[in-house]
Structures are given as C-alpha cells and as structure tokens.
Length: 90
Image (cartoon, rainbow, N blue to C red; front, top):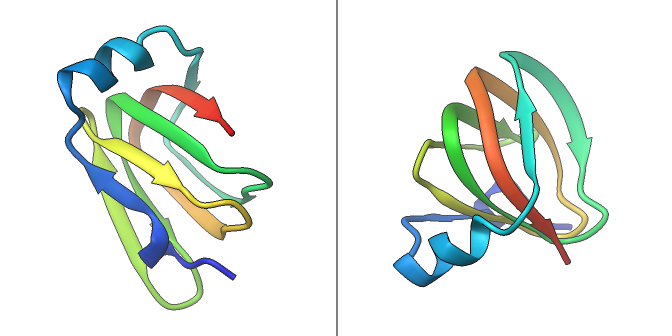
C-alpha cells in the first residue's frame, strides 16, 4: 500500500506546464477530507496550499508544484489556502 512518501512533488518543466494547461481544472475551498486514489493522478497546482497526511507522515505542496499521487493511496487532504489545479488521471 503506498504512503504519502510515495507522492512526487517537484517543479514542472516548461513542456509539462504546457501539457497541464490542456487538462481540466478542479477547485476547492479550505477544508479537510479523506480521499482514496483509485488510479494515479498527476496535477499542477495553480493556486493554493495543501498538506496530505496518512497515518504516519505528511507532505505539503503549493502553487507552482507538479504533483503525482500513486494509485491506491489512502490519505487526508488539508487544504490550507483555496486550491485551483490542473489534473489528469491515469
């Protein structure tokens, strides 16, 4: 079972930014909720700040970060600042 340590957080390349801009946008106000990934998700944060936790660890990311969540990750999202992100599943 993957953990938050398996989440990839890095700065995107220019080519990745261009590709992400073609993806849908998801938005969410500050909140906390549980989430289970049923497939891999790749996203580019346009706005906001988030901390993802599991039972043992946490990882944070913010606007400008390119993030990859593994399939089958069970976690809790804590949105500290309203989020806008481009996202793609699969």
